[in-house]
Image (cartoon, rainbow, N blue to C red; front, top):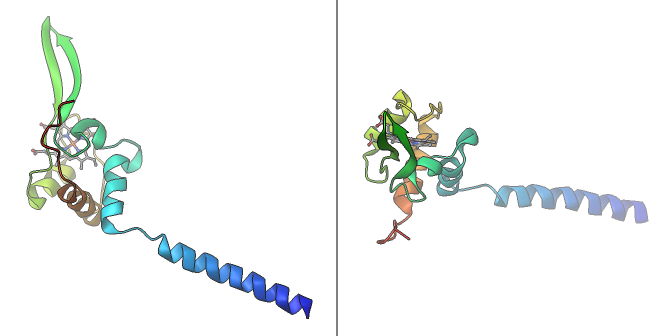
Length: 121
Ligand code: HEC
């Protein structure tokens, strides 16, 4: 009898695990956030800012001129433009080989978050 009860508990445990896993499935926006902050190792966020508002990547001097490398603002583009840029690759921006779904998830994520009025701290 006890054995049956134990087997029952094990089965319920497995069942609970499956249900738990089901619940932890992420939404498109969460997926977009994950991709934006850490797609395949290097995050868009490092060059385009937390809200896609754009930011300075680096300052450097070239032929005695002070130059700076800028990650452009990307939270105000059309989906088409956004997709094109990612599929073509842009100068120093790494090419990611994201799928159309992944690009759309990132786009939706950027759309969903509000850029604070004052981003300069
Ligand atoms: C190493 C820094 C860097 C990373 C990381 C990076 N980008 Fe970029 N991105 C740039 C730079 C610099 C440009 C502008 C290139 C140019 O002017 O040709 C750019 C351009 C773009 C553009 C086109 C903007 C426009 O106005 O046409 C989009 C869209 C974009 N990036 C999205 C992303 C997304 C999404 C990710 C993550 C998957 C990402 N970038 C990761 C540096 C980066």
